[in-house]
Length: 140
Image: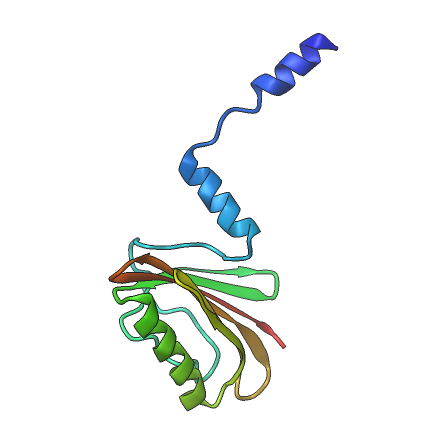
């Protein structure tokens, strides 16, 4: 029994601070925080009429079950980007289901104009001049 316990404890190697922060962000519902990275070779297929986020660098796009997840960043501050995302959804005829802004993060939940999809745009401040963008899209 003591040997089994020793192997179990030995197998639990320490995690780096960055790994712990990523796991904490994922568990909090904040999504991935992407402050840099290489641009994708093509833009992800977002729903029809999805408002363009000016200056967005799309880094990843993946399908997780029925949900599409897109991550990237913008070289602009959180306040300006939050206002642009809200007004973009209004201009596109999307329904804003919920929006909230705090000091270092913000979320805007939406439903598409055709009511086929809904999701969220989560914004996380990287610094004063860069903001992480995490977009989810799922069937309504």
